[in-house]
Image 1 (cartoon, one colour):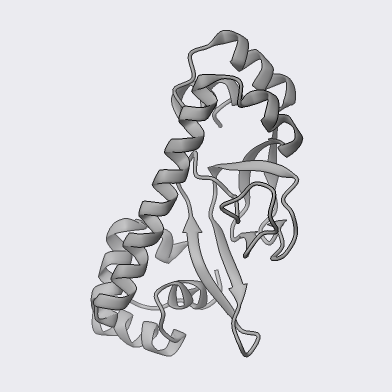
Image 2 (cartoon, rainbow, N blue to C red; image 1 turned 180 degrees about the horizontal axis):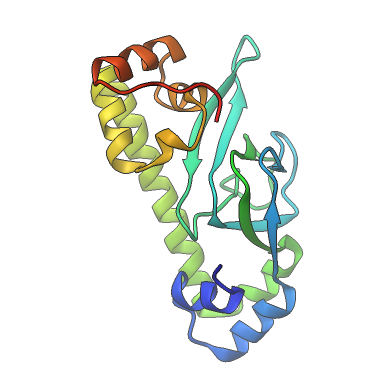
Length: 195
């Protein structure tokens, strides 16, 4: 497992030793069980959290109360934040879908950290990456056929199909689990049940 110091240096490219020392003094790395909720919809997030390893999803409740998966996070360094603003309630719930290792520090420390130019650079980069990822995903969901969406998922989310339940993938891709199972059979795959 990557250490917090290596995480900040390799994933965020932070060079300032004073900043790294400050971050290490407030950082907690935790191995969490599958199903842990990082933040619930309509709550204010109290920690800034990043994925080191594992899989997380962001979801919100649809009109009929069904859970709609909005995003899947599985890459080291991805944010587990569920709101664009750091002071507004979360617009979705962030849940871990596998045992995961997360790095987090208190939101209350962010004001002081924003005095460091490297933190502002990281914040802006993460925000931009998140926005681009969401726009690309939304365009694909609107413009691709169901099979094309699934094939895009296999390419962009390698290995996830074998790690998480089909219902989360189907929800993320805007289809029913039955449709996803049909697509998988059509491709010669053997759909599995719960992971």
